[in-house]
Length: 405
Image (cartoon, rainbow, N blue to C red; front, side, top):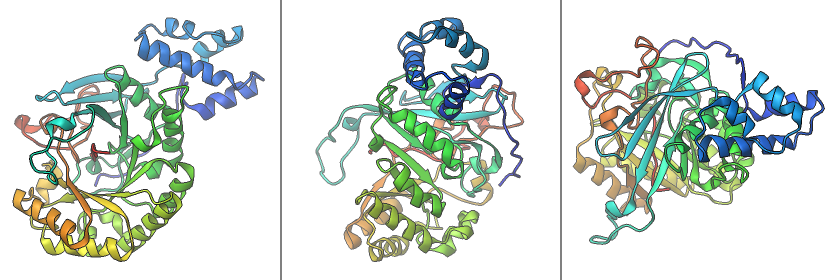
């Protein structure tokens, strides 16, 4: 993975959706903190419903504030500290990738995925159409880069450049809502969300607040490589939110070969943390992400070992198989995508031997480098351009997209 070159990030003006900072600002000036929600409600109305671009008009459009706030807010805060500098749609029209530039020039990527269940197949009910309404999911980033250095993932090659402020995480949802109504949010873009824990929690609390977007907590999923102490606190801080563990292997030996930071979080301890989370949340299912690498972790024996691991720990889980998406870093490791027959044999073994629900992820956006494991910002590129893929091939990229939830 890349070297860690993270610096402390500062803002001027400060992003207004940093709720802790705004509350402290009001308290210091002895202004009632209840105005926070009037500010936020007015901002959502102006930015998303009315699509106002003029910052002055955005502030003016907030109703019912004390006169002094109409002077203070524009002086010290900005409605949006980030901007979308590039949008790219997939050929199928089911994916839109946003390159979001932050105030200090750093960039992250977010991906909107559109999913219509009626276009998919239900392998458990041959010949029957899947049920459900079409919906859109936002895959967002929590850090600039990532320090977890998973060998199959392009984001890990960047190293960690910086943590996102809670407002910068929330703003990705604001940008997406200006394009399309978002139903689900998955923290599966750039970064390890549990290593930027407070910002993640604060941003989710804004997302689910009924005075703002009012997303259902059950429509939000936090994906982690496995920071065990934070998995446990997540259950009490955000009990309604889904947990997805990026496991990728049935045992510690294979996991260490592809997730080097896994040494700090042994598989058995990860599974124990998931079991504790499941107990604390009243039995919510745990989702397990499993990137399938041809010839490395794709055998039926691996499926049976994984099933045994979950069964003996009494985990009620869903395994999501993710066929490896080509990335430059992974290609250098000699990785290859699994044969389709291996994927379905793996799935069948888990289902039949252990009764574990197992899905095969439908990939979105490979042609625009926005599929699972492909999100990366090329620091050598111009500031407003995301990494090019060689000859427009299916190459490069972050962690993605559990759409059936």
